[in-house]
Amino acid sequence: MVKTTHEEKMRTARFKPDVKPHIVVDGQKCGECSLKSCVYVCPANLFVPLADGSILFNYEQCFECGACYVACNEEGAISWSYPAGGFGVTFREA
Amino acid sequence: MTTALTTRKKDYDAIVVGAGPAGAGAALLMARAGMRVLLLERGEYPGAKNVSGAAFYGSSILHEVIPNFWEEAPVERILTKRTLAFMSPESSLSVDFQTKSFAAPPYNGFTIMRPRFDRWFAGKAVEAGATLVSSTVVDDLLYDGANRDRVVGVKTRRDDGDVTADLVIACDGVNSFLAKKAGMQKTFTSHEISLGVKEVIGLDQTVLEDRFRLTGDEGAVAEYVGDITAEVHGGGFLYTNKDSLAIGVICQLSSLAEHKQRPYELLERFKAHPSVAPLVRGGKPREYSAHLVPEAGLHMMPKLFRDGMMVAGDAAAFCFATGLYIEGINYAMQSGFAAAEAAILAHQAKDFSSASLARYEDRLDARHVLPDFKNFKSAPGYVNSERMANLYPALITRGAEQLFRVDGHGKKKIMAIARQTLKDNDVSTLNLIKDLYAGGKAFGW
Image (cartoon, chains in turn blue, orange):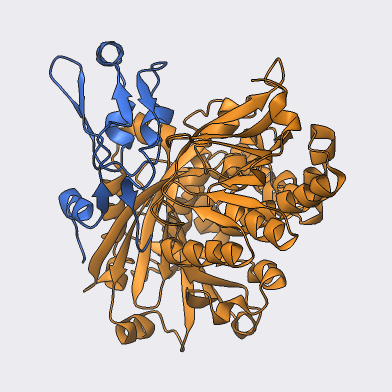
């Protein structure tokens, strides 16, 4: 078995965070969302639901896949673009 | 925007956005034809943002453009062995195909690592005369005409970042913000898109070759269907690189959200399956990655061209994900080449109108891209249906278990086992016939 925890997986990826977040989440819309799909689909586990119904998120370890905004069912709750050129994730063996 | 942009000499003949297999392929052919080509890439280098299994099938396609490319390209292994496995939580039944005929040039396929291969391929476009600028995001298009009629360039996220061209080819990947901005692609729904997560796991080369019974540079790919991803619609894959394995799961986004499953936990579940765990045992995790897969084929294809612009690769949903086949790189390359062929004719005729660029579709037909997607248009929906994704693979393994179990209760004949298995699992004869017919229609005729 080569079991790896999510933290161990994330440590094998290389990120160079842009200073400006490339993901913006509209907390008010998240509060009204009962599904919170982003929490489950994100391969980097960047979306954490809080007790008050809002979402805590981090953009720095993002694979830039787009799963969150595609899965999001609240129109416009997740604004998503790419980090600036040369920033973000850099794969070496993918 | 004024008409001055149309009449003024453009910075480039063509701008290609995205230096993956579609973009680099398009840039290569256009540069060879003497066009002034700018190839833009948002990653630190081409391939830095790209993830696949990665099996690159159909190497004869690239061989036609770069003869004997395998002698210089960073390929991992020559694919001669293919396995399809049906899984239940504790069992698996697999079909192995192996042939020496795939071990001879021009080969049938290779495993590759995208950050290495794509970088090499983009380098070939540069050798041919294309200008590659990495670390550059394209945020929008430049238009000409009162109603943004014609695309005349791109807006990059750099100071003075507007660049003009007669033609823009968007090869900007599955998310293709450019196709959406140009009004050519709709917003995706989460049942059209799957998420792939994968780990590259280092393994001693001799151990790997012994474990997968590989000779020399030969390699194996295995696709897994059924209970890999629990009730989530999806599958698994395991590919052999030179001294590592690429193992991953692909999950339909809507299904992940519906069942509240995490993709990386499903990957661990797959790695722990009794038929998979011994294959990855003792390996050293080297890189975890994730990427979206446009899985709905023809149903999510954008408008492929408009005045001054074409769309190719994943951006045009040229990803052939039908369960039996999971191919993207070959179709991306073919579509890039097809776009380049249309672009070269447009350049010669000095006509970049949508009527002129309609030749792109002819070239996609000639290169068998659109015909393949049309022929198999019902396959993605079929393999992602509830019974195909989970129930039937479970039935197959349960049936096999009964067939091979020896417990002193007497042997049953195959049809008796089949009938009992279907009955135990509440599969009606009508549904079975419907599914067999749909499967035949998707893959058989």
